[in-house]
Length: 88
Image (cartoon, rainbow, N blue to C red; front, side):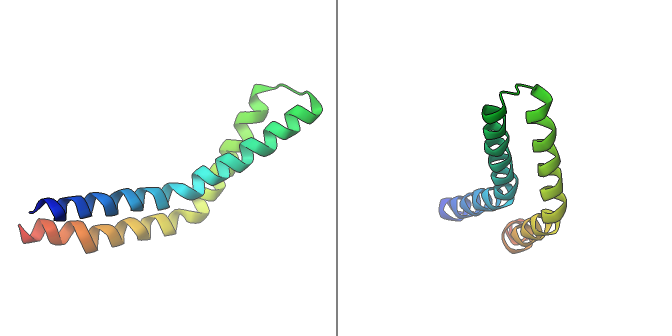
């Protein structure tokens, strides 16, 4: 395996990691901002108010986007990783 091939697989793997994690991170960001604005407007400083809705929203998005995440990983492994292993 050449250095260029290794770097290409690493670059592609990092891109797959970014695309897989993006929905969860975006939902966490939006939920955090909305909850933070709500707390700032109402002066309610409850720790569970920040944690529980954020985790609930992330679990819902994870459940909805699980097929996309699995498909992305399967495509990456079948197109890039397994042929490199089989090729030597």
